[in-house]
Length: 208
Image (cartoon, rainbow, N blue to C red; front, side):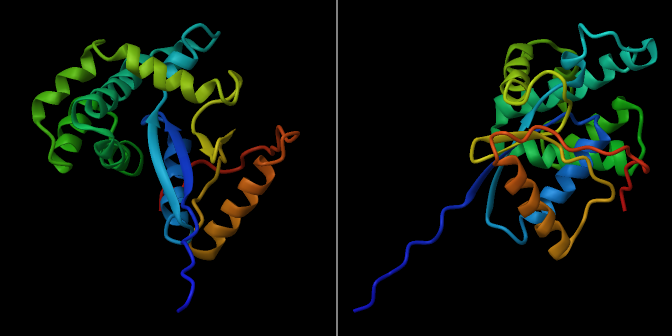
């Protein structure tokens, strides 16, 4: 008789995103790649750059984007509430592919196409223009942001309870390189006294 060894528990990862943020999109592609090399259990949650910055001194040009940004966060929240968490990531993938990789700027085109791609009812599009689930959207947002503080943005990642902003990366690494970056980020973030490491971005989001 041989002893059976229990499998190691999967690493619990929570990922907060705003569908409009290209940097969150880049990081989410990296997380997808890491999941092929590390045993992760990833749950995606909505957060909102419009909510984060609603009381901040931002440019009029940036504030003009809030209405469009809120349409996406409201839609994702409603889908999660009405159809379950399992639909959040597929919808994010469908939205992000059009918004970021596809460069589509018209939400009236993006939303119905994304819903159709993931097999969700077309009439869910109405929630993009409804505040019916704003309480839940804001609760999800603040659940993420309160773990890291108000002076960051999206994405926020929590690994077994240790939360951090970012990483901000471009392009998203693949293969062993993606896994090495993951191991390093998690190791650094796990130190309670670690708060920040940064350098000036020299490239924009590279979606290839």
